[in-house]
Image (cartoon, rainbow, N blue to C red; front, side, top):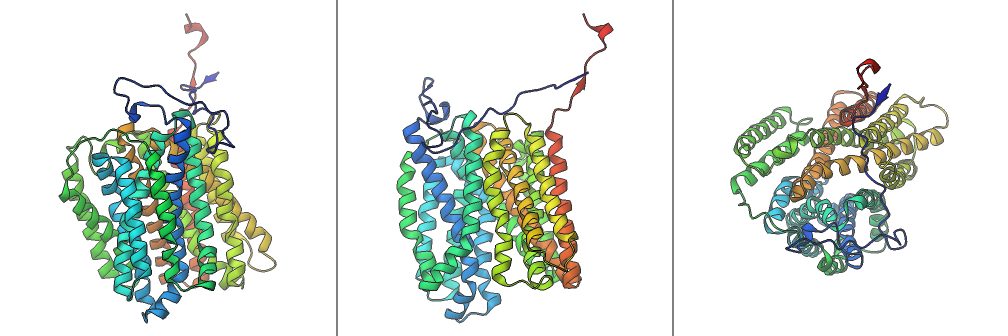
Length: 493
């Protein structure tokens, strides 16, 4: 006979909008000081304004990142830049984001989440204007770096602000809607970019951020104001963190084309990491959240996130090559076959949050990672001859469904594993894990394309992607309280 050691489950979570959450109670419990970090969420009228600001900012930064990729050929042509140089428009943005995710979280804990989040939106909006006015490629790359700084503040502090905005019993659904918004903006980005380029020149891709940014910034007045930590910022640690991630990203990018240069950068990244960890180890609230990584549930969530994002990135890169070069599909058909993935994420994200009250998050993440792995493996194993349209659409949808079931409960578990005053660090760690996984996925698929013929590289890439996703699902099982045998009846009192 078996029983669960701990049957506690996250309670059912309601939807975010007034239409989908008509009967959600207004929480008004206060303690002596009356500050919002002592409240179980914001009262309802203000809560929706805060959610509009948070999710609006997420749409702003995610949509802009997806739009810029589509515009690279047009920008390179009009600025008379080589395609290899134009790639820095994207690389500079990504570098700035990954370098300053954790520092932005630390600054938020020091100066206040609301203040730093709003400053990030303001910086992103102002930098968008500079991008639109850019007369040359260096100007545009510098402006994109500033955009990345603002985006880092939004990405690292968004989840922390959601935690102070919603009561604990509703937070899982808020995280699900955050994942849904990210998936929807990522999927819509290329289409929005192509539509704007069909009627206007490339500067308008950045100019449209001005009115949107002003609206989101105005909505920030409703954000919660949790108490600040008052801890001192360590400039040396921030510099070591920036060097570590910059060397890691650049080294991963250069390794296939310049192995020695790439290896040297990766070695510099490792040295910076060792120095940073040694410097941060004695601190109670370190820049790198070593205190949170000592919590087993948080540590498992970080590792699982890196694995699944690695698998997703490898699949995202390999599948378009597979569809176009091996199946002979057009660019438009390839885009249509990739569409079921983000659509399935949008469906699965809120559904997984609702299931979390009955199913342990470890099981949900394990099933999600398994479905992601199965979808990728089926894409790799399916015969290339014949009509593969329907099977491939099903397989990519299965992969997206699995990722949606994994992402929401994993992020929820990551946030709940951290003390409330360390929510900013938890959000920064979540964003860092995501970008680390994406970088590793790009690195591995790039190495495969450099070492193997195209068809073999695609098949091995999808295989390794499936293995990475499967590893993420397997690691998630470590969060489960496995059933323990009851004592023998003869020993019962």
